[in-house]
Every structure is written in structure tokens, then in C-alpha cells.
Length: 431
Image (tube, rainbow, N blue to C red):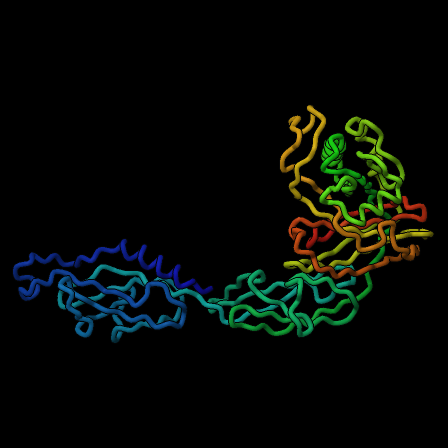
């Protein structure tokens, strides 16, 4: 690959200091070399690091500064060349010396770097199913036959338009996708990928559980539930948390949280519900098992999510699978944000060091947006089938795109959670 100019200059200076300018013949300064005072010569290349195909020229000077290039012989790896220009036939490092009369210079190394000659774009498979993500890979090929993954520095075009999610693409319909890439001054040939709808529906799904924590930065007793959530997440990786900030001017409150609080008659904090079906019993830190017991075994329906994101663009597909008929099934899809720093009131000396307030408390799993009705949109719960829904979202500037997560759940006609799953925005999670 090509070196940046400043890199070449740095390496030139660093390596040049390693070489002596002395001659391999020791002159005594009083008659050596025809008595003219010339005791050594030095050969200087036009560059010590060059791209393959670039000509390197040489200048030979005496210790007195006289240019004797035209009267000197240049040797590359010990073999003389005609003239004082060199164009390598292969990449690699070459030792350059010069001879002038009875003097030989110290060696200077010239490195010929491989260069990109073309790029290509490829995928792991020739065909994908809806509900799967296509990850394109862009490779640069150099003149030595080596390949380098340059996907991160490339631009991918999908069906003639730049892909808004970069090299990761979530298809939203069946058919052929044609893609090509550009990198530096190079453009790849196109690759065609077929998108089908032949995916199978699993016969069972891992059971996961949901905690919905109604909380507030002003709520001094809410740190008790926050601590309990930490204990649950330490005990199980099958629990999904949604933190809904409400009341008293909490800066993270939004209409979606207010709608949920009203729907479940939340009037005081803290309040935490498991699977939208039962309240988490007080004191919550002593009742971790009440949650983890709901996240064991297998069940008849489940959720998978595939997503892709770049800058402020988020595209994803939620797949709801059903092994048996589920009457009254609904889909809820939420967007959460992690890592929000906000002072938190704390009335408990035993939690979080007892500080009150806890400065820059890290609020995670914060409800920021709902893509569906907060109580769910009706979907067909047909046995041995998968329902898919595609979402295309512009992330607001006050959200951190790197810290978002997607939560999707299947609920029944009584709004109780049947199963739930989550994924970091830009990643995938299987059923």
C-alpha cells in the first residue's frame, strides 16, 4: 500500500543518519586520490522510500561537495547499472553504493514499496435471506499479489447509490442487489447478491425476560432498583432492561415514557415491572431470582434483530418467529441509549458509595424512542412462520449513535411480554 509523504520523509531522515559518509578507502589527506584532498564520496538517492514503478535517481558528491555523478558508477546490490537512474522490477529493499576513481561510498538503502493496482468487493455468500445482513468486504490488490482489507476506508454503492450504512447492508426486500466500491482512485467491478425469503422458522426459542424500570434523576430511592438491576445483569445474560424516566422535570423524560407510565398506572417511583405482568417485589436487591426465574428454558416464539449503522443513519430488521399460533400477538420496538451522564439523587448510604447526589451517574438502557405503539402493533402470530418488519431511522443529533441499543418484544393481547431481545445498534442478535 502507499506510504504517506510525511512517513517517507521521516523514514528517510531516520535511516540516513545510520549511514557513514566515509569512504571504504582510507585517504591520508596529503596526496591520496591524486593529491586533491578528496578522501570520501557519498551517494544520495532522490528518495529512499518510493512506490513501485517510480524511478530513483542518484547524486554522487565528494567530501568537498563536488558533484562527480557523471564520472561515478552506481551499484545496486553490488551490481553496476548504466547511468544514475534506477527503476526496480520488483519491490523490496536495495543497497546502493557508488564508486569514483578508487573510492567507494557507504551503502544507502532504497526501499521500493508495493502499490495498489486494483480493488474488489465480495461477500461471504452469493445469496442471503431476508432477516440476514450482508457484510461487504473491499480488498485492495497490490503489484506483489497481496491483498489488504480496505473496507473501512472505502465507499460502497448499492444499486447505483451510495450505501447510507456503508459496507453493512440490511436488505428490505427480495431480489438482486448489485454493489461496487471505490477506494482512493480505484473503482471495483460490481458484485451481485441475491436476496431470498427462504429462511426457516425455529421450533423453539430461548426464553428471555424484561425489566421496565420507572425511574428519575430526582428519585433518591431509585438507586435501590438500579443496584438490583446490576445484580440481575451479573446473574443472567437473558434479561433486557428498559429505563423509563418520568415525572418532576426529569431531563430524560419523553412522551413514550409518559404513555407507558399512564398505561401501567405508575404514580410513584421507584416502580419496576417484570414482563409487563408483575411488579418487582420490594426490596428488589433481595429478589433477583424473581427476575432470573422468568429467563430460563425455551418458549414458542422469539425475536432476532439485524442492524447496520453509519454516522446518524440506522437501518434494521426485526424478525418475530412463531413455532405455534399466537392469537393477539403484538410487536413493540424501542430505541434505548446507554452511557448518559446525569447527577442522581441517592438516599442510600449502602449504594454507590453513599454519595448524594451521585455526580455524573451513568444512566443506561434509557428509553429514547419507540418505533411502534408503546403497547405494541398487531402482527400475525402464525405457526411456523416469521414476521419481519424493517425500520429506517435518522438518529437525532442529541443521541449518541455509538451507544444506542434496539429492544424488540412480542406481547400478547393482555400486553404481557412473551419474549424479548436486544442488540447494540449496528450489530446482530439471533433468535
